[in-house]
Image 1 (cartoon, rainbow, N blue to C red):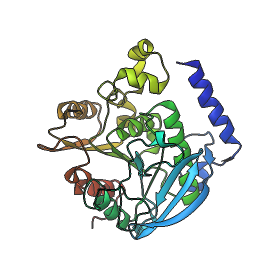
Image 2 (cartoon, rainbow, N blue to C red; image 1 turned 90 degrees about the horizontal axis):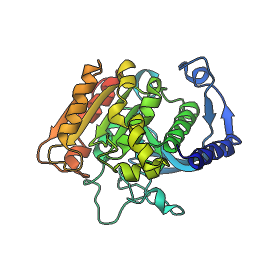
Image 3 (cartoon, rainbow, N blue to C red; image 1 turned 90 degrees about the vertical axis):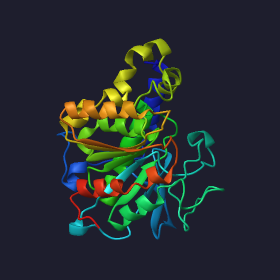
Amino acid sequence: MNVQYLIGVAASCSAYLALAGVLTIGALTGFSESAHAVETHWVIEERSSRQFGTERLDFEVDGLRAMLLKPIHAAPGGARPWIFAAPVFMGPNPSRPELNPYLFDHPIADDSPRRPSGDTAERGTHQKLFHRLLESGFHIGGIEVGDTMGNLAGRAHFTAYYQAVVAKYRLDPKPCLFATSRGGLMAYNWAADHPQWVRCIGANQPVTDLALFPGLARAADIFGVPLQEFQRTYRQHNPADRLAPLAAHGVSLMHVIGGADTLLPAKNLLNMQERYRALGGQMQTHVHANTPHGLWPELLSDPRFHDFFVAQFGLERE
């Protein structure tokens, strides 16, 4: 592993610890992952706006932009279900455009503070799905980690966000992760690191193999490791090769994919399903025939995502 990379990560974490409180998730939520205390990072500079007819909170965690949508209606029985989205829909970063080069804005809505030009609220967004989840009592949020492709630094920021929002907003300690495309690398790697914190993963055409995307040469650069070394060790950070911890902790998986996806061939993800089931895990894959890779409404708003997430929390279907 590149020593300068490790030093940079350590320095970043050390600098932020001055702003971090030390609490235990278990004391706040009744959930305990181990006998060790969990550091909880504070939410900084919380700002309120409106989106989807509900309150949207924007703030910083670990010095990065983060957000959380509050539910439109409370979940039954005092439950606090939530969706941890990857990548998060922050839109362009005004001071660090390299963090979001693809202007990942969705979901958008008529009352959204950000809306990409040339798009509509009906196409290329998760609007319908997320609105249904908000009505069903879910919080939805995430943190902007940029094109980290599931590397160690991005995963550390995911942990900081998780600890912050579970503590401050009393969210369920086991969220459902929702990944889109390259977000699969982020969500699956973080989940494999912390399977005890994950209830389920629902993913829309997720990237699960670094060799397919972004390719090992680019991934090695992003992970801060020489290419030859990364070629030998990348499977330690490759979601498709890190399924055992998820299966062992009973994490349910669901993918919605395009049958005409040339970037992420359906056969690769169906093979992943076979291997996960062989490990004893529960997984379902739904293929939309003739649909390529991209922000297509039939993928983004597939109603089975809603039903899957609701069922994982034991909530009644609408």
